[in-house]
Length: 257
Image (cartoon, rainbow, N blue to C red):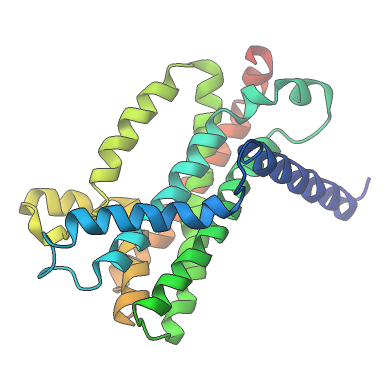
């Protein structure tokens, strides 16, 4: 089979797996995919009621500030959490069907990206309601999203292998995500923390994607050269590390799954 035909086949498989995951997620829901639009809006409403008064002076347009961080964080957690169990959940296909092993965590990450796309509908609606003026800088959102997707996929590759070898990684990662979320400044201003905590937050890769997006959406500005550098280093670096580790462990995964 030629490379082009093989690529088309793999893309078709990924589309089918993504479609299956989305249908399964909303199988027992009357509103279905609409929840991907409603969920960030409801979350934003609750968080705004709780924190908008507290941070009124330090955060302008708090609902958009929060929503920006929230949907990016959801993309990251959705992609990595679902990719983690991809190999175990699809072990029958993994053994019986001749497909590249990376198709399974990749399809889970693509499913999270599709859900993120639905959330953007709610996001755009809120931008209009809160009077955020459109600028050309907003187009950079696609670059930041692509960077975060690569970063998440790299971590997803590593987690999918680790979950096969060490099932408790799922619980450990859940604890790590809780700590990680609070270090992303999703609902509070960074300058409200101590200098030491600020330094940790600034060096947090997920926060870097969030702050870059906030700058292009809320401030109509470009990230600093340092923020650009972090974005590309984290995206490309973690993706390559995850892919190399995944390829290296394929044989062991097949023996263990």
